[in-house]
Image (cartoon, rainbow, N blue to C red):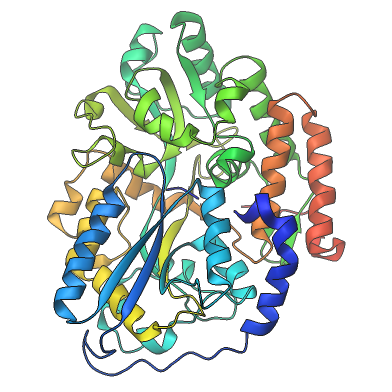
Length: 465
């Protein structure tokens, strides 16, 4: 759902982004009209989201919301705009659409890690004047509200769920390798030991998948690398000093883990890993097909296996287990998880912001929020959804992944983060393909980060965790 850039196009687009930022920051937000869902009057509203792979959960959800909204607002039309693209390309295409009032949708599905950079570019409209009179806002957890809030203190998106990450493992393959059904590794070495056992005793199976390389984009950076890094004593960003961390041993150790799994044949081949469809294949082919023993992946992946998912697989609850990703040596909290999430946002150049807000309110009624959290395999961010009996019993893994919220970490989603993330992915790919040693790749990363944020905004002190 993650996960989930403009990285491929950043060189060509960056100058345009600056220009857009300069001309857009002065745009003003229209005051929301008072009253109910019909207050904005009839309007044509365009809503854009990412469509990738065979899944149809979001498409079906939005189709239902469209019918509900149009019925409640006679004369209004909702146009659903699926952007068929991988995560990286979705970000790029969406940002290009938001540059002009002629192409800007009215509602967009916005990844929380891009909020600050998209604000800097002048793409998004603050929602504070809307949410101050919206009773449902009190139902949202403070952490979710924080993920949608920018550095300027304003809120730019309404969260529709969050996620956590852990290790999924195939109990049947583990049995063949003599590994326990109730697997609970306490350190990286125990994860590697299990992967080596799989390789030795269950040939023809990928022992361990950790997303890596440019085609998988933010999934590589967040779901792969940062799940390792935040298990060390180091971090990406020192919040006390407000500086980006360079020269850390944890960064090198994380790259060494990547080197180990790829050099020992414990991971997919580089060709497999660099397939932009790898994320979809893990959920719809490799795990259901018994071809992958351990997957470092997200809480949402089981959505593929539900009746409404891309690959219905009712047996998954018996075949697969879940266990927390351990820290490097069992230190710290012992467990590692990262969380992200997506929001519904209104572009600054939307022609119908009031109607767009009314559509977001329809998307986020308690009934609709519960429906999407259940069918979309999301961790609920609304209190009334989290307490819903149907949601709580919707999947065997729901409680496990919800419990990881207590140890989870959020990315330093500042405006510079997308560029820093791109350098993480570049370092990973250089190591996994054997083009650079971990030390060389880390050195190149450090230099790139200093170039992005300025040397005075870097530190060698992670500040601990």
